Length: 311
Image (cartoon, rainbow, N blue to C red; front, side):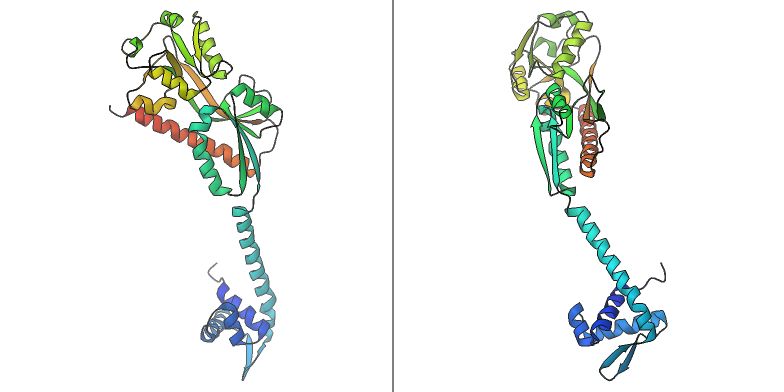
């Protein structure tokens, strides 16, 4: 690489060889005639040969110049192709990604992912379909979606699940609720009213199974169809929400909700990006999956640091 030829000098050489005029070469390259002359002399000194015969205003290639010309043209052509390839890599990919996700993912995970994805693929279109995990996975299976951002489904036979992060469900209660000061016993859950967004969600199934394994059947629910509404009713003390602490980070920090650990064990969930097994992922799809993992890890790190900070 120490003997590499200056490409600016090569460009001046090729232009001068083609038109035979220092004046025209200067115009073509937006340089002065003096700069062109200096560049050619520097190139000749570097190569140790004369490239042009100069007779008055007439300029002709020497034998060495004729030997160099095709090589110089090829070098400039390859450089142009490399620049075009980089331009295509940065700007030309076009297409559409169909993303299925839960409401929680749409609110807390995907905005950052979309922003960073668009920096790499500004011409890519993203279509988002929100729904509960079972519905989202069903759409993925039918070929209606390319990717699904959700809780890890129970049956992954036909799926490739790319981990994002792991969280834990807890009780979210009003500061005035008895559980805010005295942790509940397992039997207390049987007589409590729980606020849920949807009974059709995998989240609800996980909660039911967790308590049934402990011998407790939850009997009273308020179903709202909205995660935000669930938190609002919990803040008013009209029941107990069950959710991950990061979902109510702001409300907990403001003292509007208190996170209380579940009795007799921990209910953990795994978040994933699911794709159909055996299918080759495009570069944009692979990038999207990677960004989900990065954003999820950052989100959990921020949550851990916020939880550990002195109150």
